[in-house]
Length: 281
Image (cartoon, rainbow, N blue to C red; front, side, top):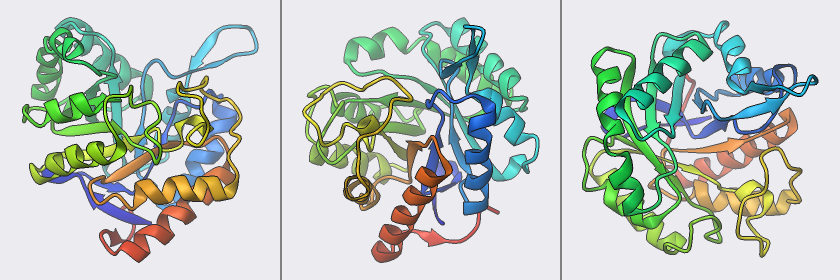
């Protein structure tokens, strides 16, 4: 596994990050988490809204598996990101507490405003940063950030140094970027963020299996992927070759998918020579 330091945060993350919006119950997800540890993955991206269906019709949360997995880990070697959709200071702070309780951890490495795509979104959510900053000042959160699907917000984030970590959408065909710009334009925005010392990581590298189809919108989490190995290799090679992303978070539902993706990332990173090879320690 190769590793990168997320800008000025000092967080050292595996180049492959583990996404958790995969709609698996803990019995199904835990083998993926454990194998990820064996392969050197130390970065896990979570959210309170990521759920799975229980047999009785109720909904569990993906972080139930993360909680069980964390019980067996050295917490200092894990980088954990969580998010909020609440634009209010109190609501964002409450989501920090909910995340901590849900995963039985004392702190979050990164806490983000999630899914902001327009300037209107930014204006509406800015008050939430007050609640996030309160959690950081109390030692519950280490670094603050924002996630976006658009070039618009990636560029705007460069104007706000309080956003230390950015999660951006990038893939080979520009899917799910809300027609806000091209992949090349997103990479330019990412380059500027990295120049300023921000942490930057990627989501939607495979667009939930639809990166090379005409379908613009994402399909439901947990849907089967139509991608062949050649498609996956093509898509992941594109994002891992980007020198302006410290990690790529991918939702992987099986150990086989995990192993395939890690092998591709390792091959690309070895050839590129940008990143440090090592262990999560």
